[in-house]
Length: 238
Ligand code: IPE
Ligand code: IPE
Ligand code: MG
Image (cartoon, rainbow, N blue to C red):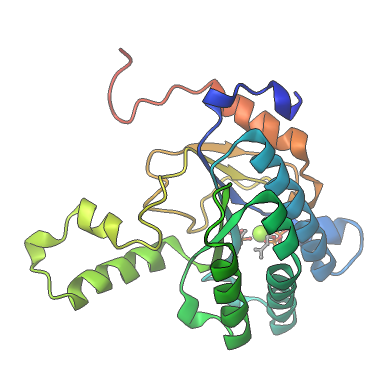
């Protein structure tokens, strides 16, 4: 299905993507895992453009989890280098397409140079009214909820003030609607700590295709699958 044949009204407003399978993509080619991350970055650019062309309003990309620090220092360093390069090098693309960059995750745990580049990219794009790309970087769903509850308790709220609504309002980006569709590439069927709170009623789409092989057609297929789902949010079909 071509992207233009997806009816605009049914396009999910917010898509989250667990971009998984970079390492296996490289290993299958007898290359270093880092080569897979390089290809994964190229793929992310392709999918950002495709999502924007489809009319998606918010796209959350799982770039680096709070658990990914467990990996070898060389791999972590390489990914951070790519992130830095991406934040610096893609600003023209964001300007042209009026795409606004956002962040979810704990900025305090990022290396200072990355956190500076990130802050600058968020500022540079903050007035753009096109699609918003939310980079989940040093992100963990449990960590986000813990940080939200800490903000509440730091504000001195009594226990009865801790509600689903006050927690929600203290998440990283409370203005952004919950994801309608969460995609995971790479063949595994798990959440890996992605958007635990926000994904409570998301539709999930799992694809065997490794992330670097994802194309516009894979995204269109995921959206087409989403359009066939019936969302009930705990209610019953009318
Ligand atoms: C996803 O690809 C990218 C990150 C987690 C940073 P992986 O690196 O997890 O690739 P696989 O799952 O090992 O193939
Ligand atoms: C999830 O993938 C994190 C990102 C895609 C950034 P992982 O590869 O870290 O997840 P697990 O370890 O397979 O659950
Ligand atoms: Mg993985």
